[in-house]
Amino acid sequence: MALLSASGLVKTFGGVTAVDSADLEVAMGSITGLIGPNGAGKTTLFNLLSNFIPSDRGQVMFNGQSIERLQPHEIARLGMVRTFQVARTLSRLSVLENLLLATQQQTGEKFWQVWLQPGKIAAEEQQSRDRAMEILESIGLAHKAHDYAGGLSGGQRKLLEIGRALMTRPKLILLDEPAAGVNPTLINQICEYITYWNQQGLSFLIIEHNMDVIMSLCDRVWVLAEGKNLAVGTPQEIQTNAQVLEAYLGN
Amino acid sequence: MLNYLFSFDPGILNYVAFLLTSMAIYGLMGLGLNLQWGFTGLINFGIAGFVAVGAYVTVILSLTQVPIVLAMLAGGFVAALFGLLMGFATLRLREDYLAIVTIGASELVRLIFNNEELYDGRPGSMGINGFPLPLESFRPTTFTRVGMVAIVTVIFGLALWKLWQWANRRLKSAAQKQKVAITAVAVLAGLLGLRAYVVTAISLSNFRANQAGNGLLFVALIVTAIAFWVVERLIRSPWGRVLKAIREDEEIAKALGKNVFAYKLQSLMIGGFLTGIGGALYAWQQSNVYPDNFRSNLTFNVWILMVLGGAGTNPGVLLGAVIFWVYTALTRDLNQILPLPTVQIDAFRMVFIGLLLIALMVWRPQGILGNRDELTLGK
Image 1 (tube, rainbow over the protein chains, first blue to last red):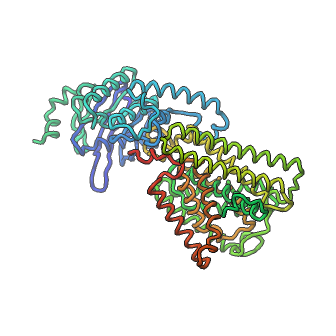
Image 2 (image 1 turned 90 degrees about the vertical axis):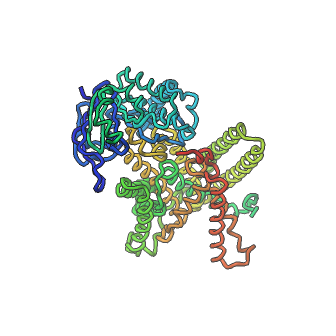
Image 3 (image 1 turned 135 degrees about the vertical axis):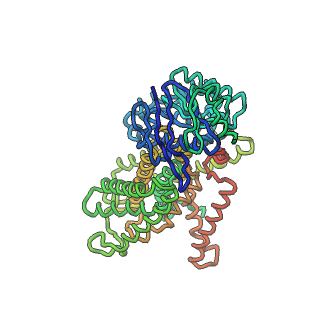
């Protein structure tokens, strides 16, 4: 069953058609890959799915609900959380605060509740603090919990992004190049985390240029070229697909 | 100049009481702006407009027999709606639009107040005066005087205690060389605080009938103290964390399911409310309102004190307000030293505060109480 399915997505910027009636499907509980040459429209497609950029045409269904008209924050609340290609951090907040922010449905996020239900807020904070420390522990950032997030290295920021996404208790995480600019040891670690969380029932959609990562993780891979669907299949099928090789290497 | 610190001459005491009132009022406006800029990253260049709305609404309502406290709250509330209006118009656009629109809207407000007959058929440019002032007809007994002094004792006591905590915390982590500086700053601030307390206590125990000055000092201190406590608590809540996240990178906040637009509106409105209440106090202090009192230089004074003390820290903003008014007091008598006409002296004071800000940006860009580490972080 499809957790996320998009059909006929179109986005033009001026005269350039960045995404040209693209389809995509992420099966429940899967790790799905999205690959394609530079400029193929992968990140734009991510932006359309999460509605950070509104699409010109097309439908997006998530968990049986049409989401293409929802605001980005509403989509996140439904359980589909995205990360960014260039890892973004809240620099002047601590690493721990970065994670605490991600907790969903916090009573204390309504300013009047700060006065009406201080006890409930304190209890929730304690809970989400414990969970945040657990996640930081599991991604190896626990010793950095009270440092400013702005002081993290590039690789650590990638981990922090994933940790933040996990904090929201999502159903699906969209990862935009989780391995880019990360050293090989850390890449292996990131892959292990992804596999672990996938076994816990979380689905992933991953854009990645590192083919080893895609081949080892993904159940299914979608290939995008010049904004159009080029191919879809298992990693093995994609590896031997003549069209895909052509798109990457030229003829 | 030293007599401001040591003299017990009634004239000097009155002037210091006036300074304390001004510090509280500007501090309150600064707290409002700090919530918007220091914590949410919203550029509000229309402080004067918020102040004007708060002042006029309070004054006109109290002239129509509305109880003065309700009038003040209404002033704050309408200022918050003013913020809502500007937020709705601009917050979905790029962030610099808010800056442009607020500066325009505040001038618009001033021009409307200047040209409309707002009360009693008088032309706006002639201003409004003769409105009720807080505690105007309050005749304190010995008992209520003791009560008032007790309340300000609590406020100053808490402030000095916070200073003590701050100094201790800083001293623990500071290098040997900094320790002297921190101790000196703490002692100086403590002495200034004590002086402020003594002056407040004296003027409250000498509370004379119809001396609105004393009453306003009392009201302004209480209102600002409450506002400080409220914003500090809000900032430390999950709500405050979302504001800070928006300041850092609103795309992240969006991606994590926060309704950024709604939070920005709330920040703009709560900040506007505080600034509007500041407007009510501002009107009472001058006991008249003229549209000319709400020119853009008021906006920039509030910005100056916030940047000076450290945007993003509430104690810093209050400190900034204190420094701003100490500076004003110290340079007031400059014409006795410099043989220049008043106009040039005034210009000189502005030039010097500009130089001071440039020096601050070079050596301490985070403001006096700001945290330097925060500025050296990469995005």
